[in-house]
Each structure stands twice: as C-alpha cells, then as structure tokens.
Amino acid sequence: MDDDDALLRLHHAAGAAGWLRRLLTLTAGEAADTPALAAWSASASTWAKAGAPAEARALAGGKAAAEASRRARQWRDGGAQRQFIAWTSTLYPSLLAASPAPPGLLYAEGQVERLWWPQIAVVGSRAPSPAGRERAARWATHFATAGFVVTSGLAAGIDAAAHAACLAAPGSIAVMGTGPDLCFPAAHAALKAGIAREGCVLSEYPPGTPVRAWQFPARNRIIAGLALATVVVEAAQRSGALITARLAAEAGREVFALPGAPENPKARGCHRLIREGAVLVDSPEQVVEALAGMVADVAPALRAHLGLPVAPLARRSPGTEAPAGDAVLLAALGEDGASFDELLARTGLTGPTLAPILLAMELEGRLMQQHGVYHPCGSAFPTRAGARRRRTG
Image (cartoon, rainbow, N blue to C red; front, side, top):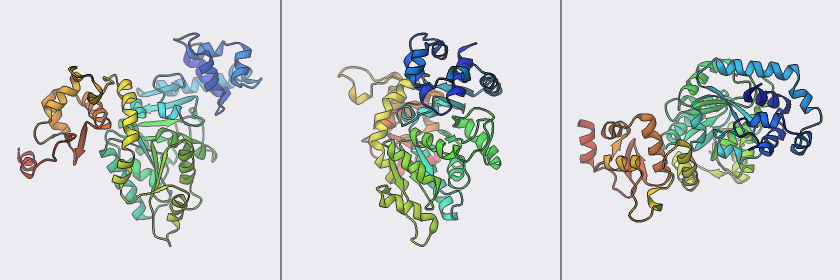
C-alpha cells in the first residue's frame, strides 16, 4: 500500500464526514512524506479522537474501499493533469480550508494552481432569461479581465454562460456534483474539457459517483468556500443559487445580487437576498472595487504559492532592491503602459512566468489595468497620442 492508496481508502470510509481531516491533522508530522499512511497506521485512540466511528477501520480496509481506490487511481493515470489534493497537501486552497466543512480530499483536473487565484463565484438560475444569460457572460468576462478566476457549478443556464465566457486564461473553475469522470449535464462535456485546459475541474466525489440530487447542494459549499465573493445574477425563490449565497455568507464571504424587474419571477430570489443583507450591484466594476481590500490580503499567499518574492515593493526597507521580475516588468511598462504581449516582447519572460507576476502586483496595488494595458499605480492613463502610437506601431 502506498500513500495514495491509503488516502483513497480512508476517503471512501469517511465520505463527507469531517473525521478524515481531523485524523490527517492529528497525525501530521508523524511521517512527513506519507501523511495518509501515518493516519492509516495511527492508534485506535487517535482514530477515536478524530471522531471516526467504530466501524471506520473495517470500512477502510474492505473490498469496496479497495475497489474505489483502484478506480480513482485509474482515473488519475488516464490524464496528464489529473491529481488528488488531500487536506494536508500544499496544493489545498487556503480559502477553502478556512471555510466551514471543507472536503478532506479533492479530485482535480486542469491547472490546479488556479485554485489559489482570487475567485468570484457567479451563480444563478438553470433557466435564465436571455438578458440574465447575457449578463452572466458579460460580468464573468469583466471579472476575468480584472484578474479573477470565475467559479461556478457547470450547471445549465447562468453557470454555463459564466464558464463559457472565461475559457481563456486565467480560466474558470467548475465544481461538480458527480465524480470527476462524469459530466452533468452530459451536453456540457465539451465545456468541461475547455475549462480543464486553462482552469480546473473539481469534485469531492470519487470517480464513478453518479448523479444524486443531494450532492449538488452539498457541492455548493465548495463553490462558496473557494471564492472571495458570490454574485447571484438571476434566481427564483427556490434556486440552488440561494444555497450558495447562504453558504458564502456563513463562510464570511461577500454576497452580491443583481436586481431585476419586480414582475420577473427569476429575479425574486435576488430581491430576497438583497432584503436579507446581500449587496445590491448593477455593474461588475462595483464588485471588483468592493473586493479590492480582500484581494490585497490574499496576494502574499498567492506569491508564496507561485514561488515569487512575497514582500511587496511598498513594504521593503529603504535601499533594498525590488524582486528581479518586478523590477524588469516596471522598467518595461514605458511612458504609455504596455499590453501583455508587449511586456512579453520587452521582458523576454514567458507567459506562465509573466502572468502571475502581473497578477500579484495588481493585487498589491502596484499595477492597474485598463482595457488590457498595464500601468504603474499613480501614473496617468495613456494619452490619446500614446494610444494612437500603440494602434499604429
């Protein structure tokens, strides 16, 4: 038995119960390179202290757990970007870890580092109005342009519109209510594959887990837990989006709701949220502005996770130098700012290296972006002459 096998068997026995997280936490450090094996071999008293039921050991060691482990490893080995993210892994997203009832194990496919980027959840009706669908796509595009990853649940309607608008980097995150090898609805298989290319597809359910109604409200806590804020675009009185909004509020995250016409039944859920304290917004700029302080707080963790220097320019001691990548980038901006492609050409950096540096500097308030052009904060926006030079140069 290796560490992955032990982890998968334990996850099968624990399901959504929190005792696996507690057991992994209690045994962390006993075998630093094999945390799940340390939990597997822990004493009965340690299992009991973690809250594991008396039958948990037998379940973890049984044939069903062994078969679940085999299927999960077969799924992982069938794709280059598939992996397991355990509670003790450095890849486990910190915002989700700080939320109520985070999963002990995640099945991920795609660019898993996106889980650490600042996220906005965009959710709403499965049967939206044409205006609601268009609004979801437009707002999601604005959030992505501002450097946020857009997170949703891959459902029909608002979810799908938001995901489809954000397939290019920094991508989108889809949290599924089935096993990672399935797709519900099936018509979204191509959308799911597109999300995995630049973003990430995520599930707490092991491969082979079929559609069950209760799993979708349960997965909403992951959507809410990953994101700094949840934006409800359009929702009826009994929409699952209201569950996500409630869970976001319980996790201490911001909840925003778009108002609609009083006679529109698909707007009544949003109106209810506003009456209960959600922030009324009528432009995506209001959401981005409201999150500025929270985004700045996650910048150091993102920098550390990406392996970039953690200390921002404004906090360095006098006489010390800027991190090399930052200094090169600031020098490359020029009088009128620069686009992403211009910065690639001027700095010689690669896209995967440049993108996180730009994001971290934006989060720290050292760069601003307008219409795809980056400028040092405090600089003037480009003159008409400068913009004309960029278009004709």
